[in-house]
Image (cartoon, rainbow, N blue to C red):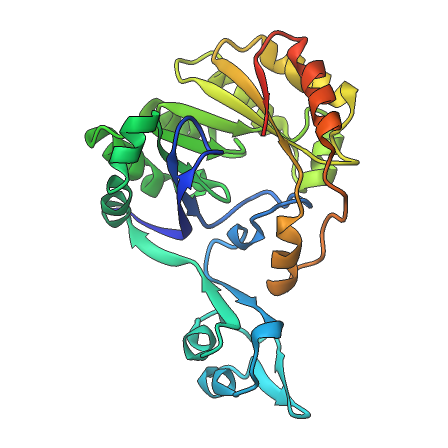
Length: 299
């Protein structure tokens, strides 16, 4: 029985594949995208999120912390993340919900029992279960048990991946699922490294091989101002995908600012500071990508 670390199960999702879906978000990611809207997924273990505006100054977290990470400084509560062992005791003690512990270990069978309750919605809408992250394929045994369990229960499944994993892992997951949602940040290698912190050589090699396989692929491009929102970059991505038979559509996802507050609450650097693209810009670049022959959708 595989055990995985997840941070959310989101019901009634309509942006993670066809129909109404239940999306299981797994912890751990090997990219560091400056625009990431789920930075709580980066760490494979537990993360601690702090909401200072909710704190009532009761000091219960100070008493609960055995490592001195929560302490009083001149009467004010302070948090030294270098001392934090992320045990979650402070979150359990906080009566004001000012501290949140993110990440829990669950068995694949436990998660399957939970998502199976949504089966009637999948049947009516043509939806199913999406395994996302983070990078879910960093927990391959857990993901494969989920996918095979979905198939056994007659539930359609999808895997949302950035493709920065070993080919055998990606290939096995693709064979076990009905759809791969493949996140493509940039085709230009230096641009990709600047935006995500890693090379895209493995990602492109994996997509090339996957694109000639049997499992349908939806390419998902986060359109990020000042990063990949040029006609040349969208053209390069669309041209690359145009020769891959398994790629059935390209989705352009407009950048939003939902991750900014999370980064602060998680003690991370601020990251990207940009305005979301306008509807006109999204439509224009969608037209650029559509000229290469694949259906293009804006979300």
